[in-house]
Image (cartoon, rainbow, N blue to C red):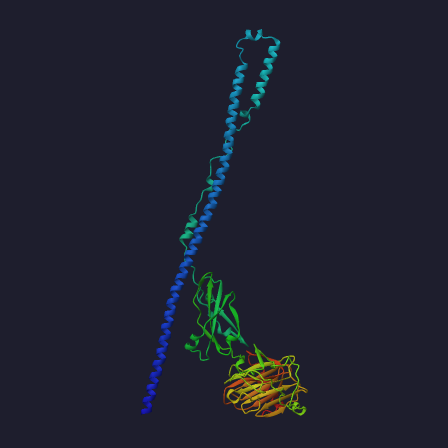
Length: 504
């Protein structure tokens, strides 16, 4: 009875704690929404003022342009009329002068006075009359057009903006596009990529505002897709998508599943997000845990190189205790260690030139690949229980580590190693090794990817989380992760297992 009461009390406490956390998250979400509403309101108000300002500015610019056209035409007509007025006044003045000149020449008033005038005077009088006739015919008054060259009509500049006023009266906010719908059946997962496909709202219900582009957001979630787990990660964005699909690439997707949502946008208006969907990539992505690396191993991205302290490059000189017989063994030869700074507590030390991966494996299938660098001499690749490896332990020498060891130091050798036992493999040294771990079935396989050959398969029963493990001596290796388990792997293994000893 006492145990039941304790369990009920614990259940009540747990339930209330979870509800309390849920309410706190809810209040935080509402508070963030309120803050976002205030910020968004200020933003759209500012955008509205900017749009109205631009509209007013455009009207002012157009009005100034139209006023300029009217003023230019008015000035042109005024100039024409002023010129015509000036020419008319000058012609009138000339005409008055000729009239006075003509009156002066016509002073003979009777026939008797005309007969009294001699021939010379008659000729002079006739010449003067001819001069008057020439001046009259050539006077500006007779060459001047007596009609205005331009009219006062300016009706061609009459403005009617009634249609534009109607348009202005119809001004309103942009229609917000409706949320699209993610088409799960057409989403594709491949290696470290997810191709997300969606349908516009117009195809879903025949409605939806104009759409210029889309915006997709995604974030990592736990495999159980709990709301709490989803709320802890920040959304990452892909903007300005013009198609109805996009491919997401990157290590942030792996190994957890990803929550994805998309919304439509036009100019500045953005619609609501679609219902978020969870897509699991299933690929295994990891990196090197540099904090575990031996002091003489350099971790740089997906590459590890052996850089001995106090030795220049790879021009090695074997010293001291090593003999030719020890160099011919399957185990990795090691030069005398050069004294250096003390390694950290988690770092491998001594002759264990080892580095671990930073992601564990527990349940399911995992696959990655390794390629040695051009100057490599010796390396091992495999998996281990983290707790089973001491700082000075080498891969394959304990019950909690399994590895494939390759060496081309003095002579080429390839071996599978576990629990301090080594099985020599009669096969050329591979340049690309695939590592496949089926945790649930207890399979750890090594494949020559270029030749599609199963090199070795350990068959066991894993009891703890596994971690990728690597040993590098002289040279370096590079790994490729975030790969899906090859579709041919199961058939490949079932066909080729007969070529290897499956028990070790």
